[in-house]
Image (tube, rainbow, N blue to C red; front, top):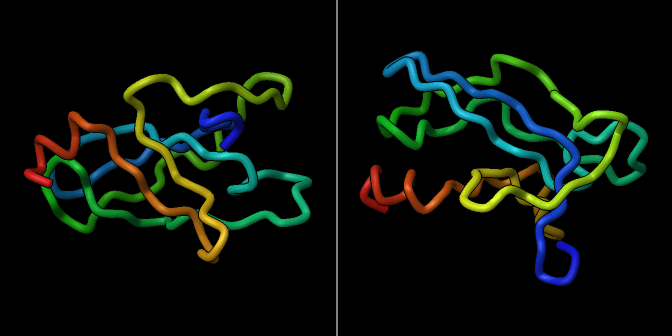
Length: 103
């Protein structure tokens, strides 16, 4: 986080094997980031924010921003958070997805 803003370097597309939904999960700095000395992985499979199933898998691999640049997380988008006390990225879903799931 930079001045309260979440800084990303890329994203990954996840696809649910149960409901067929596809969605982007952006990557906060330090997660799956090539050349980062404190690099952490993100989960290969996560809970689908649309159908509740644990069958949403990475279908794209890392999709870096052009020219290795950084950007602010687009408003309302889901992402993996880089939490200091966690060994891997933590999924953070959009408000729309949380409402849809009843969270």
